Image (cartoon, rainbow, N blue to C red):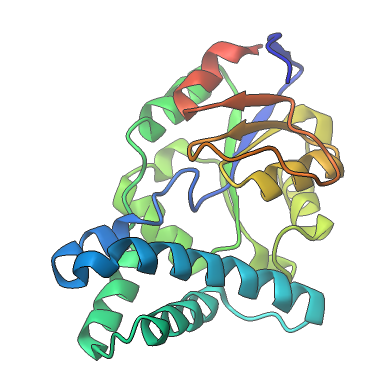
Length: 228
């Protein structure tokens, strides 16, 4: 992947869950209750959440991401033989206030100071994204908060990435898309965006259409890569 400066960028568009917000932080606040089931719950909840979005997209059976998140949690809890209804409610409420990764506020601030537009493009429902953004106190650092609810299909359908182009009124090549989800990064690249894959989790490269232009370990690396 290229290490040359990124030029011609007018906007930085971020995935939300796993990129700006730590999806594991909801369960982390319940670690005392989950005990040795913590890691398995985090992994299974996330895996099922993503699988359900992909399957619903293929089936043309869209649902609010809040429902999908709850369905995935129910599957995980049942699989791990956790029948605590109060814990289920607590985990769902905590998902509304996920912790932002430490570098997020400063990264967004630096990008805004460079004169770039900033936006979120996420599977999350508008209410979920608003709650997370307000909790992290980054609402003033974002120009747009874009939800797939506007197009009625989950990523990686191209209509999702087109939503950012349309709403920002910027050509795909003028957008740097940032995601920690490799499949999302590759899909945005195949769509035509410039892409930086924030490989927080040490994933292997995907065998999918598209290829991210850059790979970083933290969003804090991004401002220094961009030449305006």
